[in-house]
Length: 133
Image (tube, rainbow, N blue to C red; front, side, top):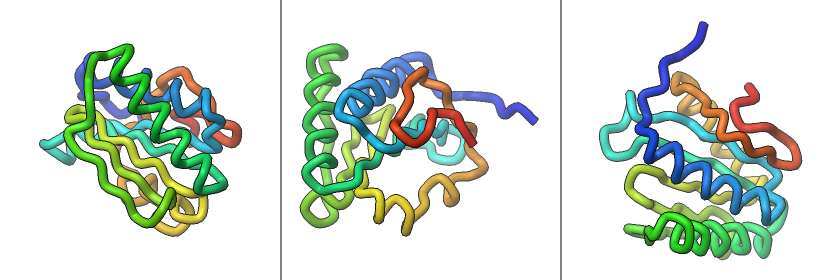
């Protein structure tokens, strides 16, 4: 059964920029979820992970830089859970969750939001393709 994607094209474009930046920094997983039907505050959750804290921070920095340079947008807020374990970057239409692989496995946001459509943003993590599930 194909689920209808309700996220705006602008949100999809922003998520694609962020996903490419994460892929460039060798994110182990990259997953885009259209949460617009479940959450009125944002359209897309982009969940990316890496296998060490330094890599998570590199991904966060790259995502913020790419969004600033390519989309002229800055985060509305940024929150972290421990040094490089889980960083949330809120860009309004897109919320990026950059997680250590252990946090990703433990909290399993994909399972929590399993009713939301996966987005194919055309970017591949080293372990998983966006939309692969």
